[in-house]
Length: 118
Image 1 (cartoon, rainbow, N blue to C red):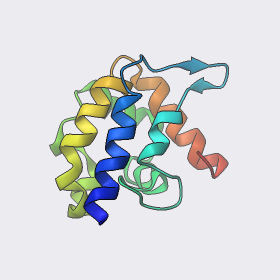
Image 2 (cartoon, one colour; image 1 turned 90 degrees about the vertical axis):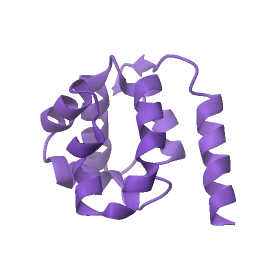
Image 3 (cartoon, rainbow, N blue to C red; image 1 turned 60 degrees about the horizontal axis):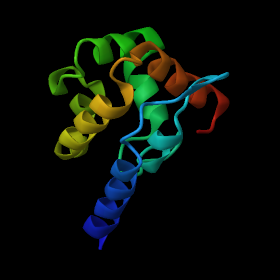
């Protein structure tokens, strides 16, 4: 059952992922990220508060994005191996949604965590 829910969430995410990431007046649009992430709880992907804690700053996360988002550079996977099996899924979403918008995406994640919502 859990696998079916994850596949449905991933499929819904991918169906809308063909469009380029949108920016708006407040910065990078994280709407599509909500399919797999929340600020304070794990969903299909890790809680963004955990991602923010692992990297410490938007600049540090943006650097990982700019360096190609290599699995070995992902601190959340290093801290909690349960995410390693989902690394391929996030790599695909990184290429569709974040690549080319690394600074804006990292800042949006940290802004969402500071605001306590996504």
